[in-house]
Image: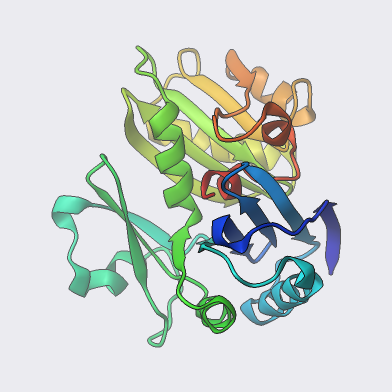
Length: 277
C-alpha cells in the first residue's frame, strides 16, 4: 500500500517552542516538527500511498508514524492539521452564509448528512473556503495533543502564494506538482482568479487539466506565466510537454524567509506543510 517513506533526522528540544504540522490526504500524509526558536526541522516523515486510501486506513498510518516518533514527545506549543482533499468550494464572502454550508458543497462533492463541514476565511481576498475535514483525524489529534488548529490545504497555499506574488501586467499560473496530484492557482494583480486540485496519472493528464482550466478562464497561453514547483525540475517530461504549449514556463522555489534554501529545495517536504509552520 505504501510507496515511499522519507525520513529526516530527529532530535529532542525544548517542547515550549516546538510546533507540529500534519498534512493528511487520501494519496498520502506528511508529518513535520519544528523548533520555532532555531527554525530547525526536528523530524519529518512523508508517506505516499500507491492507491488512494480511505479515512480509516489513513488514520491507521498516521498513528503508526506518531508512535514511531515517541522520542520527540507529545508536548507542542502549537499543532496544525492540514486537510488535503477535493471536498471544498470557494465562496465569495458577500454570498457566504454559515447556515448554508452543505449547499456550497453538494454540487461538487459527495457529502453525508453526518459530515462535519468547516470553513476558512482567506485573508485580503473576500473569500471563504468551505470544506469537509477528516473528522476521525481531528478526533485522534485532539485525544493525543489537546487543542489544535486545522485548515484546508488550499487555504494555506492560496494565502502563502498571494503574500509573495508581485503585481504583474500578465496573470500568473502556479502549479504545485506532487506524485499524483496537482494544485493549480491563477493570480492576476494579486487577486485570486482560480484554484483547484486534480489527480493525474500521466503527463498528458496534467497538460489536459492545465490547458482546459486556462481555456475556461479565457487565459492566453502565449501571455500567461506558468510557474511550476514541488516534485518537478526543468526538462522533466511534464515540464517539456507544458513548454510546447505555454512559452513562459519556469520551475521555481517559493520564497520563505523562515527556512534555509536547502530545506525549500528538498522535494520530500511539501511546500504547504512548510508554509503552515
